[in-house]
Amino acid sequence: MNLYSFPFRKCDPKGCGHYGAPRGGRVHRGVDLACEGKTPVGSPVRGKVTKVGWPYVGNFDIRYVQVTCETYRYRVFYVSPTVAVGDMVELGDIIGASQSLKHLYPGITDHVHLEVKDQEHNFIDPTPLILAMKSLGA
Image 1 (cartoon, rainbow, N blue to C red):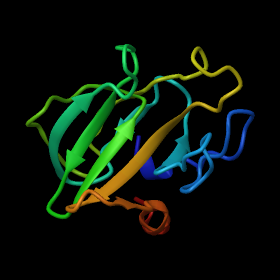
Image 2 (tube, rainbow, N blue to C red):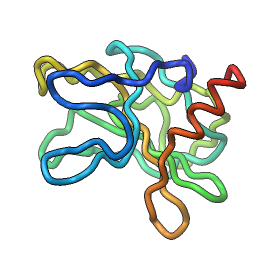
Image 3 (tube, one colour):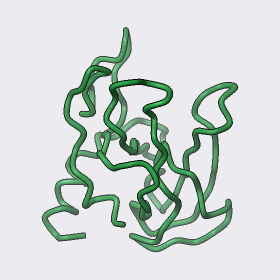
């Protein structure tokens, strides 16, 4: 399923999903897109899978997939990967299935987290990209 077809995660008892939302002394550097666990997740961009990792130290169940194109690095968190480092993907190609977070954070809305960095490793607000892709029906 296309990542850009998922609705934005609204606020729930565990926080809000928009870029810049407060996160206990820091700010949210991505955008959360609501989806049920085990939902197929498509690549946000055409590029190369450059990393498959674990966002939480000591937790080897929760994963992310990083896809890099010429100008940006996209990380999609809370995805059980079906791709490997070195794979080339097209926009919308399935990169994995979403993972439920409810066992870690009771009351949270299940979602995937999308963050984007430029070549200088600066975080970029992905909201305009998501809105543009939604308007195109991508």
